View: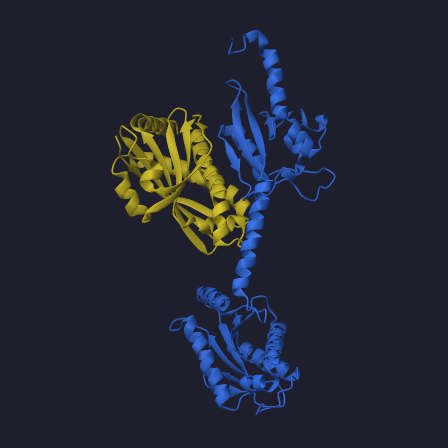
Length: 202
Length: 329
């Protein structure tokens, strides 16, 4: 069962919208300017991740921050930007005075925090709405091809991917980012069950 | 040899662990689910200068009221609430805690990188561990590198003779300002100017005096710019370019005329000039108001051809690109 019903999809988008909404507040505090995050799209991918990601991100290499979540269901969550797009976000966060060269050193650290804020916010809202608890690793920074970063090949068994497109709207700028949640079959089914349970209670 | 301490040695283990945490050269604080500090290691004691009774059993935010609603406080809150670890990077959070290398000099805080991790004691009790790393040395190294890079970069972008930006910086600045003006649809003016009969000046007074003259002109031009975004660069030889963002024709024309008069009033002697006894300028102006059919190179070329016309029309004057001449001897 890889297709979500419309109501399941809406419920999940709602969860993530609340999550990234909270994250946007934390980020605005850091950046000192209004930042708006929205989740316009949710897709579920069952296979051929790589081709789809390439078409989507249109960049050979991606920059990502990941955390492993464990609990009632296990997932690896990624916040992903096309390589090069992160400069602008980090520059805003650190202050305009920083040149592109020196960003590299600060960038990794800043992105880990940014990813941590957004991923935690999403998982928190998921755990709140679905009434579950998660544990998590600290964020890890990656830079490479989408295949390397997501290490799609080495995992045996079918991997499901929840893919969310996020708009980062800052004054004068809009940047596209993505959230990926990689789940195995069992975890994906658990997630659907949790969503259904949540839906039956409202 | 036993590898695990037997149960009755719990108290001993507690002592060992506490002592270990106190020996650690990172800051370790433990906060309970009511936001109260239950552990504050020796490193934190040393760097914060807080007494035992200021921290132990005291709400974290009572000890540090400045942190109310801060990112650190929110991170601790949500770690307690959701059990997810948080990371506060030094890049984005400049020294959240008042920690000092030298408590006698509190002007500079220790640069910090902070991890907030949940610790589930049992099903209903969650603590959070706040681990503080001193990254001051790394930050200092980075700053040093940055300063060196800036100096090098500065040297590469400044005209050595006059101390104003060189052509390279002009190109970058103009490109940036042109983009900005296009985005905001605001006017952008370019002034190009040239010292009249400068070759004759050099022949008459020698190159050393020529260099001195260039420096005086460059300083004179700098002193005439009013706004931080106004920009002057040496374009080459005895030519200078001024970029005036958010400036319409009329404003640029007024400023150009003021510049012409100012340089004339410096009264630098120039006996071989055919238009004056003193050093004078010929000035060309171009302006972009709408950005449909123009590039930044075209803007420079237009200012250049206005300058050419100013020279053809007798020098020591200002000409705007549309051919309309104002200001003369």
